[in-house]
Every structure is written in C-alpha cells, then in structure tokens.
Amino acid sequence: MINNLLATLFENIGEIFSEVKYLELILEGFEITLKISIGAAIIGLILGTLVAIIKIATETGKGNKWLKIPNAVCEIYVTVVRGTPMALQLFLMSFVVFAIRGFPQLVVAIIAFGINSGAYVSENIRAGIMSVDKGQTEAGRALGLSSSRTLVGIVIPQGVKNVIPAIGNELIALVKETSIVSMIGMIDLTQASKIIGSGQNLASYLAPMLVVAMCYLAIVYFLTFIIKVIERRLRKSDKR
Image 1: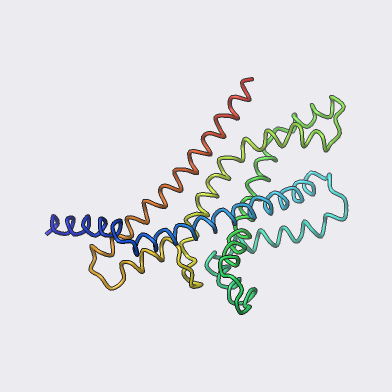
Image 2 (image 1 turned 60 degrees about the horizontal axis):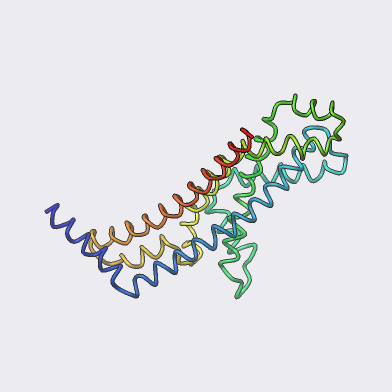
C-alpha cells in the first residue's frame, strides 16, 4: 500500500511539471510570493532603520525635545505590531484601511507585511547598535570626532555586523509568512498548491504541497547564501 501511495505521489509530481496549467499556476504563485517578499523587505528595512534611529537618539540622550513625540509613536507602533497576529494586521489592512474598490491587493499585502517587518527590523537594528561597547563612542569622542560622526563612522558599522544575522532571519520569516495572503483572495505559492490539489486524493494533494515546499526552500536557501556571503566579506574587512 505504501509503495502504491509513493508511486502515485511521484506520478502526480511528474504530472505537475508536465502540465502547463499547473506550472503556470505555481509560477504565478511564485511571482506573487517574491513580489510581496521583496517589496515588504524594502519597506521593512527603511521603516525599521528610521524607527531604530529615533529610538536610539532618544535613549542615548542625543535627541532633542522634538523627538519625544516621534519616539512615543515609534514605541506604540512597535508594541502594537509585535503584539498582534500578522493575519489580523493583513485583514485590517485589506478590509478596513484600504477597503477601496479596485485597490490592488498586491499593494495592500506589501504594505501590511512591510509595516509588520519594520517593527521587528527596528528592534534588531536598535539592539545591534546598542550592543556596541560604550568605549567605542568614548574613543571616538577622545579623538575629537563629533557625536554624529562617531555614531556614523564607528558605532553603526560595528552594529551592522551584529545585526545582519538577525535581519537575515527576519527576511526568511517574512517569506514564509506570506503564505497567509490567500485570506484576502491572492494566489501565492501555498494557495496555488491548494488549488491544484483540491478535490483529489491524499497523494495528489501532497504532490503540489511538496513542489511548493521545494520552491520555499529554494528562496530560503538563496537568502541564506547571500547572508553568509555578506558575513564573510565583513569578517574579511575586520582582518584588514
């Protein structure tokens, strides 16, 4: 029975790769997943960096009184986003905030995931920069550098090296989290596998799931490879 099930499973996997309609559906889902992931990653990095800078400036006492309100907004933003499920945030963005007829769901998903990612990225960047020994700042000041030049030229470059692994993990998590976009009617990789396998037997349903799993693994492996390359280059720069 197991042999028959495996034979059927491999047969269905072969059918997916041989049928144009199945391949087109998976490629469409792959494209949607990539677009959401890349767009959200860009928004998350920009937003997260901005929030981290505001919070660091406030915590280190280098910010003026005008940063108190932005810092309070950043604190609320990070607390709310990290304290609520991504599915709920996506639902609210789609059916409340951007409940506009004809508004592209792809843009909604990118914004929702970007805002969510930004909260986590900001904490990663803040923690990485704050983890740099205070002696580095004192050394920069002793050399006659201003606070801003010390931060930009000495502290941030060292903090970035600490942040990269955490940012990489966040990007990988972001790619996998996009699998919930089907709740707002989008066809991503996961939804494509459900459509292909719907109404069929267990082996046929498993086949598209396995194919999609390989697609996710390929994306994650590529991200992991890029992160390792960056880390190696940074280690070489340290030796120099």
